Image 1 (tube, helix red, strand yellow):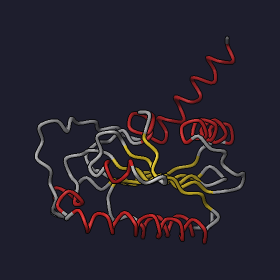
Image 2 (cartoon, rainbow, N blue to C red):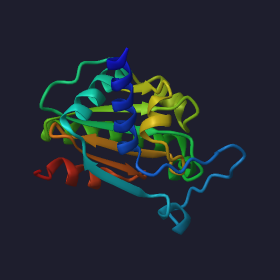
Image 3 (cartoon, rainbow, N blue to C red):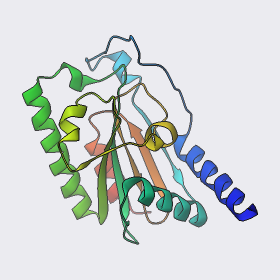
Image 4 (cartoon, rainbow, N blue to C red):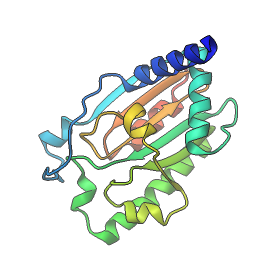
Amino acid sequence: MIKIAQKGILLLSIISIISCGTNKISTENTKVNTAPNSKYKNTIKAYSGTLSISEYKELIKKLEIELKTAIPENTSILVNFNQKAPNCIAVGLSEGTNHQVIINRLRISERMSSDNNAVDFFVYTKDAYLNEAYQVNPAFTLDSGFFYNEVFPEHQNCAGFLIIKPNGAFYKYYGEDYFTEVKKFLEKIE
């Protein structure tokens, strides 16, 4: 019983480290800002740090459960995340453009992951904008609520990512146009 409680406390501390500064807001009855204006730019946030070995191992176990896969050892992890939020440039794009953006995101993420010894995942919430497109694409995983509530608890921007390196270094970013940030962190030598 004590070991289970200790693991629960450890997992909560890992999640709070990755969560770094929650700022939950409701997106119900909110007009969506689709312009890259100052309001949108203020929702772009980044957090980084390093997990201890035990925190890293515990988080990997939880990610494997949530993503229903085994994560190879000594591999970086890239989680691309989509949710409903009041700031979302993609909402202002046409369906055809969004379809192309999804294809490009998959291609770019796969290439960067392959080039940097990483595995990539795409997770979306059930109310995410474009969820119909995500539902039919096998590369996307429906969030159980874990990523929305525990990993990406800020709900001001509709997209973001989390990278976790094998040494425990992590980088979390909220914003839609993020592959430059992904590349910099994956290529960074720790």
